[in-house]
Image 1: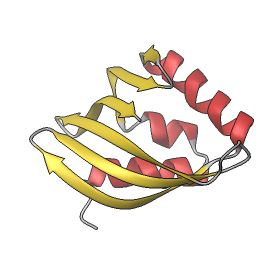
Image 2 (image 1 turned 180 degrees about the vertical axis):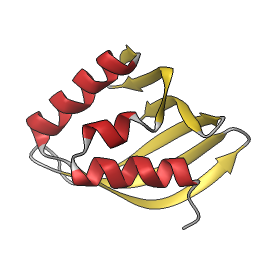
Image 3 (image 1 turned 180 degrees about the horizontal axis):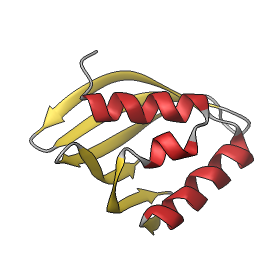
Image 4 (image 1 turned 135 degrees about the vertical axis):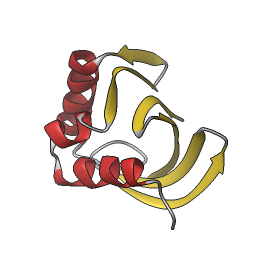
Length: 106
């Protein structure tokens, strides 16, 4: 699978549970939309990610990726301690200047 480097770094940091490395993949004013909630800025994104990791101990394994302009849609297998695990979710990354400016998970 041919992932842009910044997205590969995101999944690597996520898999290692490295919040600092994960946050380094985002632009300072990035936005994450997940479970009908919007998380904007580094501190808020850190809280969202930390809470999700602690609550579900999830692991995300990318399956495939499709580029659509500035957006890269990555289907990932998500398994963890949550009802219905495992599930497949799409992570839609908007990348500009080698940073993630928006991530939508659905």
